[in-house]
Image (cartoon, rainbow, N blue to C red):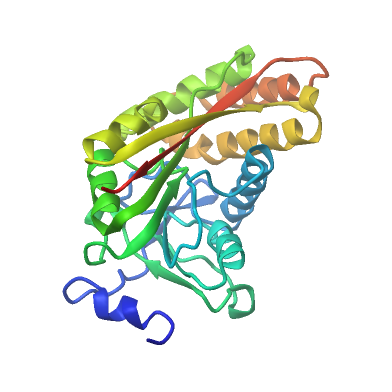
Length: 295
């Protein structure tokens, strides 16, 4: 069967890719209209997502934790810029890799390996694949996009489309630890912003529960701690930069909800920048990577 011919034959019902999601301007950033996702979808966010990918890969020393051998079909939910999918495609050149996101990655054809396909789909509306399609299903950094009431449904869908014996992997960040006053205040406003959208930024601690409730087995998880700030060298500097860019990205919508005033937000942002550039510190962010196997 030709490349991805199995996919077109196995799509559920009369699947059609969702039309381009309408972007709305909030401040000077573009956001997906009527979506719970708290972050923008624009060129600046593309750069931040790539930075986040490289920092995470450096800290983890790999792109996945599941005990993969020779996967045939891989699904990446919330593929973002497509960077992870492309690297997995190069690691497993005989596998077909499908990336799914509410907005397609803006890659030119030359950047996309032949064994990678990107589809546009809102995961909250279900996965458009038949049962037992993929032998590895992956999702990470979607904690800010999935309402807490929908998270379990998404994991259930991941289980449905995974083959028996296949693996599911979830990776999400936790709450920042040992932050200074500026960063801690900003993070508190971000949590409140998430709460107003039914987003639980502490859902990381429940990943293994989501997997268990989906009927999966061989559940385990790995915790990785990311130092944040210049005190931890280049990796800490880049991880801290990622957090600052993220906090700048949510400034306009947070102000729009009157969670903070512009002057207070900017003051705390300046303070956070100083905290993360200090030569001494202990600020960090935990990350949990949970894996499970389909029976």
